[in-house]
Length: 189
Image (cartoon, rainbow, N blue to C red; front, side, top):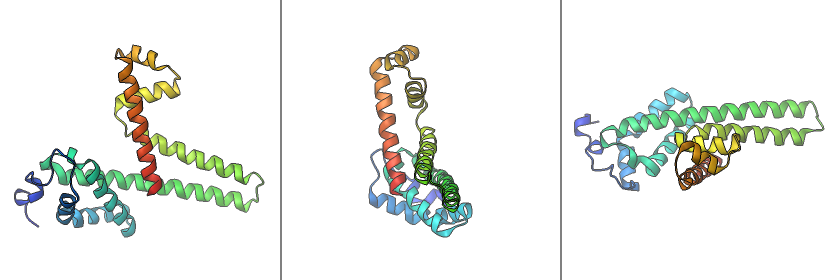
């Protein structure tokens, strides 16, 4: 592998202000994919999980990688991979806890098993939503929390922030769109 000075992916040829193409992501994968997979195997201690997270990382590169600076694209990849690996672990841990609770419920032959299962699913969805909320920009998180948890009107939130009502509505709309997209991506994964 070439040094960083001779690396074509860091010279600005592949990462551009526009959306990355499949070809540029493929080139970045060829340069960084093996090292990234090795890193993820070390983090997750599971080759199959590391492979899955590696693929998710390069999917994220295709979606939002154009936001990374040319000179730091390798670091960006490893940072995203680490965050995706931690999210994978959290999801895996939640799944195991729910399976344990379900197994206990089934062993006890509980009559309220269907409602227990619905409660567990809801609990998992709320936990996922909390994690995803933390990934929103601060101003969007604030609007969502004020509207949903504090039950404030958009007008009151706009007044408190001293911003136009349209700005608050836009922040809420963007937050909801992002959460729906992320929630859908997790369900598909």
